[in-house]
Amino acid sequence: MKTLTSLLASAAVALAIVPIASLSADGGEEQIPQIIDSGMNHSEAMATASELMDGIGPRLTNSEGYDRAAVWALARLREYGLTNVRTESVDFGLGWNLDSWSARMVAPRALDMRMIPVAWSPPTQGTVSAPVILAPMDEEEDFERWRGKLAGKIVLISEPDRASESTAPGFRRFDGGELAEFDRYEFPADDRTPFGSFVKRLAFPQQLSEFLAAEGALAMVRTSIRGNGLVHGEGYAFSPDKRFALPFVELAKEDYNRLARLEIAGTTPSVSIAVVARINETDLTTENLFGDIAGTDPRAGYVLAGGHFDSWHAADGATDDGAGSIVVMEAARILAGLGVRPKRTIRFALWSGEEQGLIGSKAYVDRYIVSRPVDSGLSPLEQFVNWDDYYPITPLPGYSEMKAYFNLDNGAGRIRGVYAENNIDAAPLLRRWLSPFSSMGASTVVTGRTSGTDHQMMAAIGLPAFQFIQDPLDYNSRTHHTSIDTLDHVPPDDIRQAATIMAAMLWQAANSDEELPRLPLPTEPSKSDPFHWEDPEE
Image (cartoon, rainbow, N blue to C red):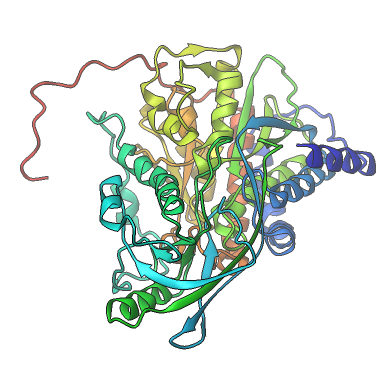
């Protein structure tokens, strides 16, 4: 990125690099009290979090917001005294920058509505005002029903549904029984692509936008998947050769349903929509960010910590995954401040493109860890879904160098344990390293797997790569990808605890004489068992 490169050059000149003391490590456990003291009594996590979330805000992949945040983060890592602070370019697609937006019902009465443009929506040409038409479509077969009826209309493309009546608590922490349920070995699935239909649904709006534009529609509107006024705006038209063919916005469920009820009742409402957005067609790359604490033994490999630095744009990306990124950065500050070098290098990664299909971490795996014969004709999301089916897997020189990876990306809740990712042999060592933190609520190591974040590509090839178990808080009920994903939903005590544990796990992994066991390098699985019939009780 030209803009990011120039900003980085200026920042590098202005900053003095503070070197980490070059003393030799004398073990892993001896520094745990110092790590706890720094993380709990001298934390900088929330002040750093405010700079990122309040001061910079959302960090959509390949946006100007991401570039500003990257310059800031790299400067911070240098200030902590990390070495080899750098970016690595990752192929992505169109950049998109959102400047302003508004939506208003103008008839039968005037009313401001809660709206967010869907990511990579083209802008409106000024303000678009038109009557709406309720025309739900979720597959190509629906097009014929609406052909010839959409010209000059703003099209409501979702089926209206009722607001949530859930009785589940909006905010919660795990109890011991719930944690125990995760301690289950995950058997191989017969369906190797369980998210295939999901990806197809994500791709459909692109096709739908082309149909609507050809029919003369002015804009398309979907409903939010949550109620209570929340909007999201996730979008996936980021390929160099694909984009939505007309403006695409999301309305809060209550505002959408009001329009739908009026239209169904015969009082067709009119609305006005304005979207000011800029699409960058010249820069099609994004950047992962890295910094190291160099180890004393160059032959001992390295351990890695990561969270994803990108977010969606409806709010500040605080719980997804600003909190995880801050934990990684605070762990770097804590360990750099020890004044003792580890045996193994400790690397800190802030990934880009996670929200669009683990693009940043996959690029790292492809560049350094293994090669797989991926179908380059597929979109990044399709590659992500089908990645486990590409064989053979060929190790690269970096495959043996990575000794552990710890990821944080399940909201802002405190750490309760570790998913061992079916790596039964690794569980005892993980428990031992976690044991100093049982009084902080973190003591559980479960056999089970979790997916959908950046450890997944590494665990899938047998590496000792783990996601921490975190208290859910209100992540899945309210904040995940929504317009209230702000620092208000990041409890300070939880972030201090998580950063302290992240630092301690990294330190022990970097200094332990005993390495975490890894699973075998996967080979193409056997055909499905012909006698594996469904359990009638499931």
